[in-house]
Length: 267
Image (tube, rainbow, N blue to C red; front, top):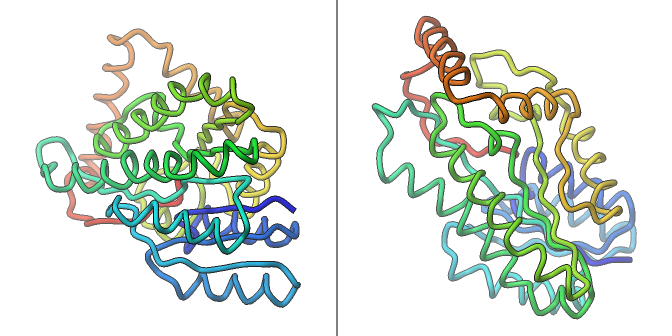
């Protein structure tokens, strides 16, 4: 069975992905800041006769990523699939966005994800495997109140697109995952409508199937991707008009501008 390294595996989409790979019989290395949920998943895998290991990791500290990848590779005897899934979001309107919050989001969502994939280059080149970065449909059009998150996902998407041709030429697939809204404890806090909301298990199964097909890009669900595609191609004047209306609505509902603090998100 292929060997998987997955970050952000303690909650949300990452936890559901870990469950899916374990259910499919894969050997797996799970990394996250919180090890409690990881140890539960590892026990399930071990009870089934699979190799599994929990690795404490905060991808915001990029110095710790390469050792974590090396530990996973040593334990599993190599790596075939590496998934940079860990992500954070700090919702804040532009007038209240702090530089330290912007840095915190970019450190995890861009530098942490990129370093995870780069640290696994040697192993993935040997196995001709798959590098996966979990971006978001939010990368396609930025909305009010989430400048840091939108910017980080757009940067990650650009990074994946840039490295894809070089790895493809060497037999390695680079896959960009663009989920819409996925139900997690964090998205449950959102005070606005989340169209086409998916359950994490459903989302994980979709991503799993896309990885098996070695897709270059997987955006889902289809209706959300279609809608965001339309927004992406709107002329700026039309999008700005729509965004201003959304902004006024959020302010009226006292969603935009309230103090919500740092949250970990599934995508």
